[in-house]
Image (cartoon, rainbow, N blue to C red; front, top):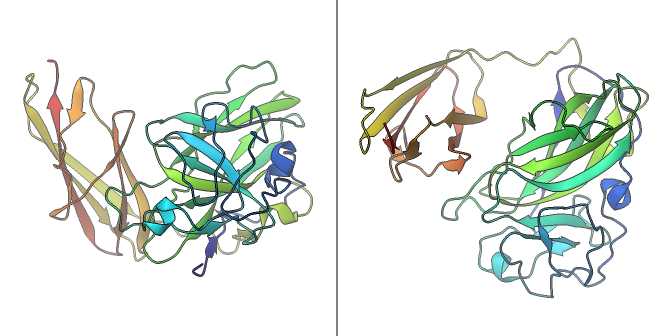
Length: 331
């Protein structure tokens, strides 16, 4: 396999983290599933109820997954997806075939739960929920999509706490090597003694996850988080000055197209990388295929819940122009 890159989450301040409270899937590591033979998985779903909305599928040696299924495996290095150049070969985050990871092949499902766990918590305490994710799709493939996640939180009575929380890390397709990204968000327990947490895939994507953790922001960091990197109070996250200007033509008649131009200007001296452009389309409109352009070059955006999304890189002091059209279905 090629060299693997690991990018840890960066927090805006130095914190100390307690032990991982997640016990499902062997403390979120999937490491008690030893398939023995590389590129295979257990014949029976090892963690019933963990991935509630995807069907578990056994991965046979050299085989692939069918649409909207998941598996638990140690490596993905010798199958039709990998050998055809569509997926990266991958091992779990430790890089060893002696441990395992969860692999999802989400083709049609969006805003769908794929990891669900209930954990005991202390009242009114901040916790860092985190996991590592690898986008399996190579950037060179047609219509490569980033993996975008949210966290859904339920209280001890089963009620939902607010809306889904967007996890800020977007896991993009990569061009030259596989990259594990650490994703996470801070949640507060409120007046609850337990929380049910669900990771949501916002859009169809092919990805692997590993090392899922919930850690109180207290005590000493544990090994679960891996190569954790925080930013001290003396080195705060640099602030980016970004301007957005959006214009459109005036049509609102059924059957007519509305074309938008969005100019994103980076007025700072810091390069912006992997900025997620996200624009909710107006009600009663649909995206017109093949109309999305970035600086005059045709690109393929991601669509989820009638929201158009695309990852941007904006060098310091420069601007990016985005153009796309939607069609009015009813006036």
